[in-house]
Length: 249
Length: 249
Image 1: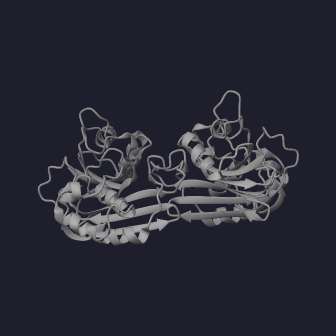
Image 2: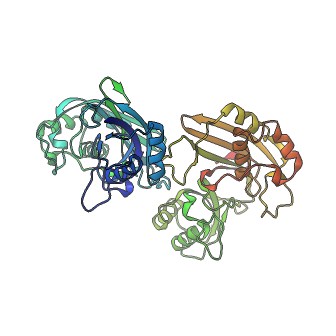
Image 3: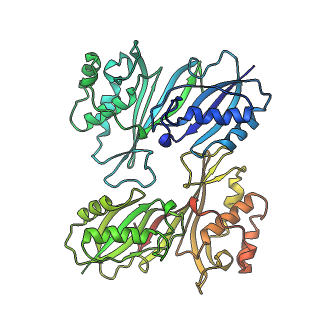
């Protein structure tokens, strides 16, 4: 039995997230069908992360066991030939049988993209949050810094979560502004359900005077979802990179 | 009578170019309808350039005469409120009555975007040419340099053109490579029908060994469309900037 470690990117707009569901089209079932066709067997792929409906991925990792003898390069070509245009396989390599895209993961990096202008961006529809207000990068940066470190992020966890342990470690939280484009980048050992979208919504609340940067530690300490800000829309969010062991891929 | 100088961007995918047509949806009629609604009069807009079906614009200029007393800022907001998401007004300023977006134009800059990778890019669908072959930037740069200067570009003029004077001056032709993204930037006093797309197709022919860089002057000298390369697809092309008098806007 071989184990393939596969990277792909996808535009999440037309999918109800990654994970297979009964009554909605998801990335997992779409990819599984194409992978199974190329491997000529019934395939189950293991994704590195659930993503919400509308969330995108620049470099998503999944693993899949196979009995096929196909060359990895032909696997990439074959699956890309089957996939719709909004999903693309980037690479495939052989991994040890112990490798699992979700359980072997040591860190995840997400970016949140914002188009900051009065006018909307015809090219960013479904790909960036359109935010019209003036953006105070220094203020938001100061607030974002309070998220870094190891904290109980219960206040930033969506109501539907069944996670019992809500402690996570955020090692980076950058705020970059380039003209009318704002990029928030956050890297952690893992994230709770809706955690990034609630953090981004809270940072926008800081920008709008709803909170001050020094409120962030108090919101964290409250362990109460109602103390944090709104949940930012899904369509600005991208799974950007996944780390395995010491190696970032 | 006031004269508005207006900049907009649009995603050209769902339009049959800028110019009004009888049996197809174009940018001009779409914008004219929204402008007329906001100005509360029958408006005719004058565009800086025809663009082909599927071609995009980062900063397109049009002018429009009006009897309305509306503030320019409210004009921008009002028209954006009426427009579909793939067209966006960026700015509006008052111009002298002699200003005409097409006839006052002194130079135009276009970019052509290429996604250069074996795998397709889920985010660049309809926005970049997907080009799988290895790209030799030095070779293409050498060829592109031969386009600069004042030449008769008849060999690079689509068959449907009725232009009699086919001499144009190209002042810049850059080839930039950034990872898997290639950007060709060309600036001239004007372009013939399909001229950029044929130049880009010919440069890809150079990359593929169909032509050598030193063939470019011979192709230009031939004044024969059949000597040049293929016409590159429209969806990688963007009207990027327009210059008026000494001032680039």
